[in-house]
Length: 317
Ligand SMILES: CC(C)(COP(=O)(O)OP(=O)(O)OC[C@H]1O[C@@H](n2cnc3c(N)ncnc32)[C@H](O)[C@@H]1OP(=O)(O)O)[C@@H](O)C(=O)NCCC(=O)NCCS
Image: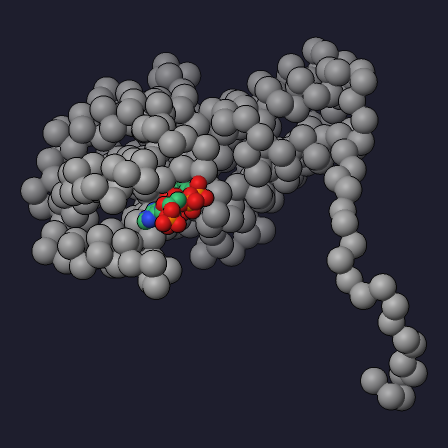
């Protein structure tokens, strides 16, 4: 898609829209622009659509961000790699020379790689469900972005950052740890525990290494939020309650810390997840559509409502 078209799309959105709203709109609108890669039965066309989605997504996310803060769009640079290019498009301004720090680019690359796929999560299943009808590829991925937007999915690291803000200072951590252990208090430590992993999430191990590198480079001394995060991690890893229940810091805990250290605003956390996850969505979409035995998805449901309900006249309701 040429950038003139991108400008046109963005002009239709309010500046204070969430970047995810803009992404759902722009990615869905790609279906109105690319008419030559929509035959889902043609392997080459599927490949082209996937390349377009994976290549455009960082540009769209960075543009959504720039648009939301009222700064001019920064175009992609072909001499930079995927992650460095994304950082450049988000943080450089036309008036100044911008050099991407290789440690930050490496951290971003790891974030994208670790978020690329995670089997039948909600957004990937949404993409598969939408594509089972043979729908347009760009529309299917827009459906995945819409699902990812929710706080129970792509929004988890945002919730983690909000919790760190609520804790505020290191001296308040014991109070929150006590609340997390209290059966009568619904509070949970965000960024700890996982539905599937009952040992350390292997992605979190790699992400922790990146978080340590980034924090060492940028320093945490002046950032109370990051100080709280480091202390919370230390306490939780050594506390019998968390050890016994196998509640390790998860991938969202560390990615939230890295984003905060990089100065990435909270409303960009989920768009960055969307950039990384696009690879997985495309892979699932390709796998499904290539399979000639695929049938339209039709989850069954069990009716649990009333067996008999008498008709009540409109005048009596
Ligand atoms: C991720 C999560 C939903 C997994 O839930 P789950 O696999 O269903 O685990 P359960 O809810 O059965 O929890 C098992 C026990 O650990 C406790 N627990 C789980 N996560 C906890 C947390 N983050 N803080 C405090 N206690 C927690 C539960 O209270 C439960 O205690 P019990 O055995 O005394 O009843 C859950 O750990 C959680 O809410 N984490 C915080 C949110 C988060 O970080 N989400 C992103 C996930 S990638």
